[in-house]
Image (cartoon, rainbow, N blue to C red; front, side):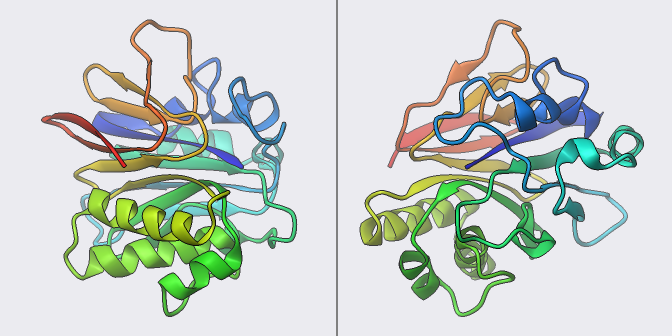
Length: 234
């Protein structure tokens, strides 16, 4: 399992997801409060953000614990965007611990993270190729193939989740993706929360104790833009 978070709204730094909040992803890497499977997320971390001067989002990924990267605090303060995604990883037994297996995955302007697990035989038929042999990379590739052909991002996530769950009923499939203009997510097997204010903050668990965090029901798909949020049953 993993923990992930995303932001869409006025420009802010990646530190706002990682180490500025009391329970940001740095704290969640060693002391998550609502993680149902696993106790630490020390098998890598990654973050992605959108720069208006670049055609593709920027990514920074490492296969080490997030607290072990001395360069991260400065980088997270300097990296700023209206759309951010970050994740810390707890690798499923048998899955590789390497940068190519670490979220966020990226293709065609879309960033994606997976919190959960799925049998490889359930996800490999969903795409022609993937960046890594891990389950998350195959799920990402399947979403990217559908989104790249014009399917809306949330619909792409929902279709992949339903196909994977049909092959592996025990799969846990919390996917979180963004494309610079929207956030989309599925909730299937673990916690997921939203906080709405001047923008949309989405996370596996609340990053702080402010009022306003609301849990998204299991087996839901979320679509969030600057115009509002929609939550639908899967």
